[in-house]
Amino acid sequence: MRAWRPFTDLERLLDALEAELLAATDDEVKRVLRAAPPAPAVRDAIVAAAWTPPLPPERGADRPRPGRCN
Amino acid sequence: MEMERSVERRIRVEDPAAAGQDVARAIQTLSDADRLRLEALARLRAQSLPNGFAWTDLLHEAIRRALEGVRPWPPNVPIVAFLAGIMRSIWSEHWRRGRREADWLRIGDAGGGWDADTQEPNPERVVAAAQALACVYRLFAHDGAVLQIIAGLSDGLTAEEIRGRCGMSELEYDTARKRMRRALLRLGLAWRQP
Image (tube, rainbow over all chains, first blue to last red; front, side, top):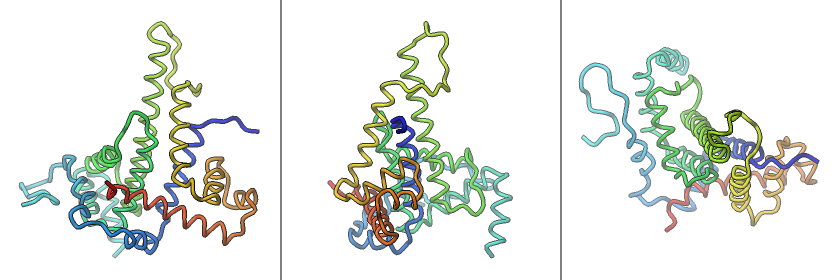
């Protein structure tokens, strides 16, 4: 019987579950989304949150950054 | 077309600013399905991090590293898989840092022989990992077949070995895996709950 190593087990399990999530087909994901459609106000929260970190500087002219409200 | 993009991306790997713009564009145009995948991935990792690391912190840190070119985005890797890989690295760093701090507190300056890479488990780390494991198991507490699969995955077994150990047919295994994926994706929807 192998020794109980919770951290190793956890790491392996999370990697396997991550692979499952990445392998989920668009149809599977859409079915879950249909069952609980996101409210319009929060639907873009991920993208909005994504823009919170600083963006790398653009090269060349001072063009507006993508994702910012202009 | 795909090949042209791939060549362009290979060139941009050498240029962090341009690579950051590629990442920014890819994030901006994420589909609803990919956003849900990404959020479920962030929540899954974050809920097993000690010291209350929020899933948004984990996601932001991954995006920041990607945008700044700390981690170059390899050609032919989907953006969600790329960000998932960065979150995995952050998760590992966080656990390693926690272990070092716990060791330092335990041994202190007098320890002398402290080794950051020691594989010796400390009690705090064992308890935190066990709690995190229990947290993942709780997600599937209602589904015996999925729990068996989870146990097999954490033991490092292959699909065939899990089926053999649990006496599952291929169809039963695949059906249970689908339920498992749905439960994981619903984790990504948890933010809509009050």
